[in-house]
Image (cartoon, rainbow, N blue to C red):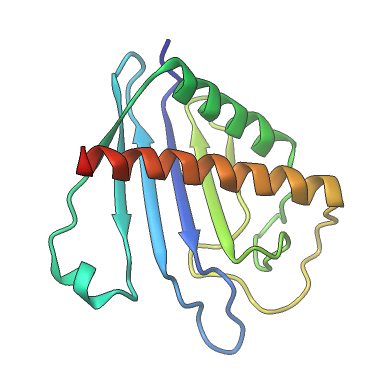
Amino acid sequence: MSPEPFELRIQHGIAGGFAPPRVSAVHDLSLKTSGTSHILLLSQFPLDKEVQQNKLNSKNIPISDDTTKLIQELEGILRKLPTETVPSADIYNRNIGIFWQGADGFTWANSAPQGCGGFEGGAVVTEDDKKAFNRAVEITEILVTRGIAQESA
Protein backbone atom coordinates (compact mmCIF):
# COMPACT_ATOMS: atom_id res chain seq x y z
CA MET A 1 0.00 0.00 0.00
CA SER A 2 1.51 3.30 -1.11
CA PRO A 3 0.42 6.77 0.02
CA GLU A 4 -0.93 9.34 -2.40
CA PRO A 5 1.70 11.64 -3.96
CA PHE A 6 2.74 14.54 -1.73
CA GLU A 7 5.43 17.12 -1.07
CA LEU A 8 6.52 17.91 2.48
CA ARG A 9 9.07 20.39 3.84
CA ILE A 10 10.17 20.57 7.45
CA GLN A 11 12.17 23.66 8.34
CA HIS A 12 13.90 24.05 11.70
CA GLY A 13 14.29 27.73 12.40
CA ILE A 14 11.28 29.79 11.26
CA ALA A 15 11.08 32.47 13.96
CA GLY A 16 12.66 35.77 13.11
CA GLY A 17 11.55 39.27 13.73
CA PHE A 18 13.92 42.18 13.27
CA ALA A 19 16.47 39.77 11.76
CA PRO A 20 15.63 36.85 9.45
CA PRO A 21 15.28 33.39 11.00
CA ARG A 22 18.35 31.19 11.49
CA VAL A 23 17.44 28.06 9.59
CA SER A 24 19.35 25.08 11.00
CA ALA A 25 17.84 22.29 8.90
CA VAL A 26 15.50 21.83 5.96
CA HIS A 27 14.18 18.41 4.99
CA ASP A 28 12.25 17.95 1.74
CA LEU A 29 10.31 14.72 1.30
CA SER A 30 8.41 13.93 -1.87
CA LEU A 31 6.47 11.16 -3.47
CA LYS A 32 5.70 12.13 -7.06
CA THR A 33 3.82 9.05 -8.28
CA SER A 34 1.45 6.57 -6.64
CA GLY A 35 2.82 3.05 -6.51
CA THR A 36 6.43 4.20 -6.09
CA SER A 37 8.41 2.15 -3.57
CA HIS A 38 10.43 5.05 -2.10
CA ILE A 39 9.96 8.56 -0.77
CA LEU A 40 12.74 10.93 -1.80
CA LEU A 41 14.44 12.82 1.06
CA LEU A 42 16.83 15.76 0.61
CA SER A 43 18.24 17.41 3.74
CA GLN A 44 20.15 20.67 4.04
CA PHE A 45 21.92 22.11 7.09
CA PRO A 46 22.68 25.78 6.29
CA LEU A 47 24.44 26.54 9.60
CA ASP A 48 26.79 23.53 9.40
CA LYS A 49 29.63 24.58 7.07
CA GLU A 50 31.22 21.10 7.15
CA VAL A 51 28.02 19.45 5.91
CA GLN A 52 27.44 22.18 3.32
CA GLN A 53 30.91 21.64 1.85
CA ASN A 54 30.10 18.00 1.20
CA LYS A 55 27.73 17.14 -1.62
CA LEU A 56 24.26 16.55 -0.20
CA ASN A 57 22.88 13.39 -1.72
CA SER A 58 19.24 12.49 -1.82
CA LYS A 59 18.12 9.48 0.17
CA ASN A 60 15.26 7.06 -0.34
CA ILE A 61 12.84 6.09 2.39
CA PRO A 62 11.31 2.69 1.63
CA ILE A 63 7.53 2.74 1.73
CA SER A 64 6.13 0.23 4.16
CA ASP A 65 2.65 -0.12 5.65
CA ASP A 66 3.95 1.69 8.74
CA THR A 67 5.37 4.57 6.66
CA THR A 68 2.09 4.87 4.76
CA LYS A 69 0.15 5.00 8.05
CA LEU A 70 2.44 7.73 9.38
CA ILE A 71 2.00 9.84 6.24
CA GLN A 72 -1.77 9.39 6.34
CA GLU A 73 -1.81 10.30 10.05
CA LEU A 74 0.29 13.40 9.34
CA GLU A 75 -2.03 14.56 6.57
CA GLY A 76 -5.07 13.90 8.78
CA ILE A 77 -3.57 16.01 11.57
CA LEU A 78 -2.71 18.87 9.23
CA ARG A 79 -6.22 18.88 7.73
CA LYS A 80 -7.60 19.64 11.21
CA LEU A 81 -5.03 22.16 12.45
CA PRO A 82 -5.61 25.90 12.18
CA THR A 83 -3.16 28.13 10.36
CA GLU A 84 -3.08 31.78 9.47
CA THR A 85 -4.42 32.89 6.09
CA VAL A 86 -0.98 34.34 5.44
CA PRO A 87 1.38 32.48 7.80
CA SER A 88 3.49 35.17 9.45
CA ALA A 89 3.85 34.16 13.13
CA ASP A 90 5.06 30.99 14.87
CA ILE A 91 1.60 30.21 16.26
CA TYR A 92 2.66 26.76 17.57
CA ASN A 93 5.78 28.14 19.31
CA ARG A 94 8.06 25.32 18.11
CA ASN A 95 10.31 27.25 15.69
CA ILE A 96 9.51 24.49 13.18
CA GLY A 97 7.68 24.98 9.92
CA ILE A 98 5.75 22.27 8.10
CA PHE A 99 4.71 22.79 4.51
CA TRP A 100 2.43 20.13 2.96
CA GLN A 101 0.98 19.79 -0.51
CA GLY A 102 -1.10 16.74 -1.35
CA ALA A 103 -2.21 15.21 -4.62
CA ASP A 104 -5.77 16.46 -4.14
CA GLY A 105 -4.62 20.10 -3.95
CA PHE A 106 -4.75 20.32 -0.16
CA THR A 107 -1.97 22.58 1.11
CA TRP A 108 -1.04 23.50 4.66
CA ALA A 109 1.71 25.71 6.06
CA ASN A 110 2.40 27.24 9.43
CA SER A 111 5.19 29.51 8.22
CA ALA A 112 6.00 31.66 5.25
CA PRO A 113 9.02 30.47 3.22
CA GLN A 114 11.06 33.44 4.51
CA GLY A 115 10.09 32.70 8.13
CA CYS A 116 7.87 34.28 10.73
CA GLY A 117 7.96 37.49 12.70
CA GLY A 118 8.39 37.54 16.44
CA PHE A 119 4.82 38.62 17.18
CA GLU A 120 1.52 36.98 17.99
CA GLY A 121 -0.44 35.58 15.07
CA GLY A 122 -4.10 36.05 14.34
CA ALA A 123 -5.05 32.35 14.45
CA VAL A 124 -6.46 30.86 17.64
CA VAL A 125 -4.52 27.74 18.65
CA THR A 126 -5.74 25.55 21.51
CA GLU A 127 -3.66 23.25 23.73
CA ASP A 128 -5.13 20.30 21.81
CA ASP A 129 -3.98 21.93 18.56
CA LYS A 130 -0.47 22.31 20.01
CA LYS A 131 -0.44 18.64 21.06
CA ALA A 132 -1.55 17.62 17.56
CA PHE A 133 1.14 19.82 16.00
CA ASN A 134 3.72 18.22 18.31
CA ARG A 135 2.60 14.81 17.01
CA ALA A 136 2.93 16.08 13.43
CA VAL A 137 6.51 17.18 14.20
CA GLU A 138 7.19 13.78 15.78
CA ILE A 139 5.98 12.02 12.62
CA THR A 140 8.22 14.19 10.42
CA GLU A 141 11.19 13.36 12.68
CA ILE A 142 10.47 9.63 12.35
CA LEU A 143 10.34 9.90 8.55
CA VAL A 144 13.57 11.92 8.32
CA THR A 145 15.34 9.52 10.69
CA ARG A 146 14.32 6.61 8.47
CA GLY A 147 15.87 8.37 5.48
CA ILE A 148 19.10 9.12 7.34
CA ALA A 149 19.24 5.51 8.59
CA GLN A 150 19.06 4.32 4.97
CA GLU A 151 22.21 6.30 4.24
CA SER A 152 24.21 4.49 6.90
CA ALA A 153 22.69 1.06 6.20
